[in-house]
Image 1: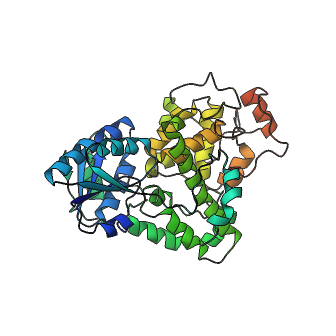
Image 2: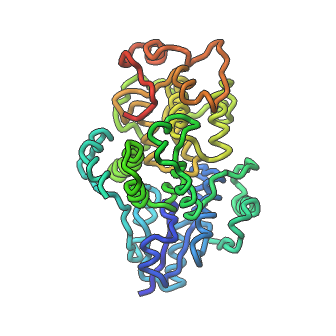
Image 3: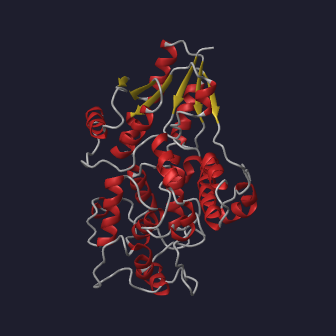
Length: 137
Length: 274
């Protein structure tokens, strides 16, 4: 099943598990120009991201609109699933939701020692509850 | 869409900067390279240099030992869980626990953002001090680092030139902008998010809300004594005349919040999250 690894700006790790699991898949990143302009993202962040991308073997870097660029790649390369990482970033989540309409999306979750669905609105409460888990190997 | 080059040498950062400027001509070019080099290798090198044993006692000082790993964690070059595992393999100390709890803060912010979505861009709670008259856009003198207060202008310059700020410095700036200058936290948060290499809506915007008191039980403020203690070796002195920070916490609360909030008698000295 042809797969495509799509890196987002919250997960630029050449040793990420998804890279190991999909070793033969093409790897892409898209600098989303509307996002960069709307959020007025500074050059230092763009350079940091670009430098991080250069460490990823065979990465293909694009600029344009993320969803349109990925759709085009999915079509050109006959991709059936896009592999990426979870992020709480609502803008990236929005792009992921768009993609899901036309292609299977495999997302690797962020790794935390505990998850908590109890809406702890204060860190002190969260820490009291989970301190032991965080401080245990 | 257009494909970008990937044949540039990572070591030639000037060439990369020039290339990116040509591909993204709308970027403001400060002419400075950030000292923070992107990538996992640079992140691992920084981790190796990090003196964790000093972190617990020094982390609130602007010249103290901090990891400066947030660009690498936020951009995912290093994973939070691998840092936690690394820390727990060091000799167990208060420093280790403090560092791990700071990692937990980041996870906590992500959990809140994951649940709230883009609602984190608005007040999550009712502010604990009056803020309805706050200015909705960032004044130019703040954006340009020309407030006339040398300490604040220095922090703004550091942020713009490097894309990074010490966490305590971020809190000073946020507090100055929201409480002393009466600017809506969102305007400041958006501005700082745009400039930070580690810009992360969860950590950034929720920290601003924490300072503002829309995601905490009280506003975060600092005074001259605090600024001198934790930033004195890094920041230039400010003029004594009309110094907005040179008051006790009780006096500041009265001046800034007109009695809507009374700090505890000891004030808050460390600038830590609580």
